[in-house]
Image (cartoon, rainbow, N blue to C red; front, side, top):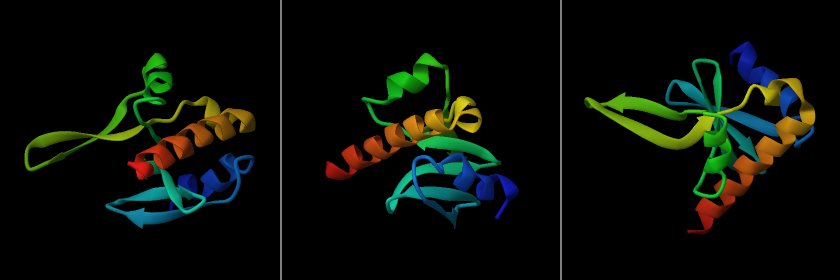
Length: 108
């Protein structure tokens, strides 16, 4: 586990306990046993849906993309704003946005 991934427990302390799990060369970030984010190349991406995406797009935070079989795929995760690393209340707010998006997508 990278130092960055370990640091996320501190970042999201106000939200509550998180756990991380290796996956596909990166890590999944879980809160309340629901995946709310992913880490790729020591960058944090948070779960989005149609409701929360506007908050990320307003800050020009790009979606996580990967290329497979020559095709670029965008996932429902956007880069986290830098404010989550500077302000515990912001980390909690953005973590809740991601958690709510994950819950809504689970209900479908």
